[in-house]
Image 1 (cartoon, rainbow over the protein chains, first blue to last red):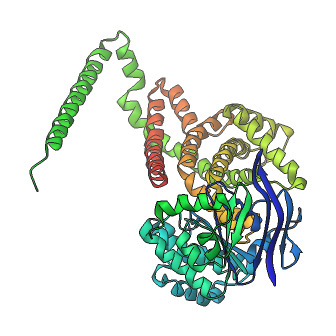
Image 2 (cartoon, each protein chain N blue to C red):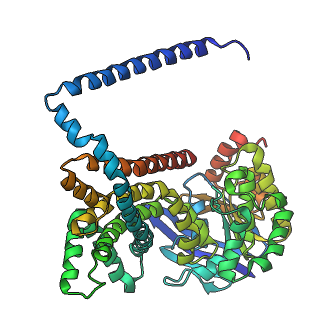
Length: 248
Length: 272
């Protein structure tokens, strides 16, 4: 059953064509990694899926319903799709626990008492039980990013979008965040990631999409994309990034 | 402790030299002021009419007492200014078409009241509205004078709050919206608490200015410290009460300004 599908999605900022006809179907339980150079449209694609950016043309369907209809209230849709950002974007004036509880309280109408158990369980699951009362500036980058993931998960989303969530981290902190993604992958969460972690993408993704100039230039299982890329541009991109820092 | 490095020895010497020069030049200026000013032909007259110890001692308690009225006016104006300023700041960001008149009104309001001298607003409202022939106690200059101060200062506070709202990074909004929060909840729980914290020092400076401008109400009636000093001046034919009033204002405003600067430094440090 297809969960989220994009049909000929287009988006420009000013005269700059960022998405130039994207077709993509995300099936339930699938993990898709978007790869491509900076500016290839990965982040914009994720932001459009979450309706943070309205699209100019095309359609986005969630369980068959058109969610890209102009004038549609985006709130209930966003509540079903979790998103984690490169720069964590935790609310600095709230404790980790309050960061996580805010949306379930305000959007789903749950009380603090009702949320305490499930939220504590999420912190426990990702090794942050002793950090619930801490404020974001008291946490390391890796811990902040894990809290951001917990915050999105607390809304019990059907799909999770991850926008280069390890790119702002010190190298030694990347592992703990990737472990969280592995854990989520194990639970069958539907996930779309924009990532530069090629090793991670190769090991865990069901499908890799290589974006170039706002189009999906090539897509397929990691074994194909990484071993036998068909497109010259994919080969050029991979040889560039794999040369640099694939050792890890 | 280990022996100082070459760099430390050099810096210590530099610092000593700088302190020495600063002390010497300060002393030179002070000494010349103390020696030269009394040489001015009118100095004795100035000393008698502005720095008269006897007049000062006689009037200072009365001035302090009158200053309590300034504090009281400040105390009831300040919370109303904060509330109105916040409302206007929020109204300026309304995007609903039906509420466009409210937004327009808020914009016009901040433009008008930031563009007028405070004393002019106090005259227009303080004399104008009671002139409608309102019965007691509704013709009190306390009410209309306070309203003038509130209107002027809330316009400034609104602009300060709005600049705070705009200083919150777009990513905070994106994070809140991505969780499914409404625009109103995003403002209330995510943007506004951060924005208000950020503009505390700037607002403190405004409230220091307010404490001074309360004295302007004396022009429409209330006998607060400035007016009281004027009364003493006329009684004793001496300007020393004004110096006394100045000292009382400074005793409040200098610590408050310093504290605002201190808060501003903290904010700057935590933001960088």
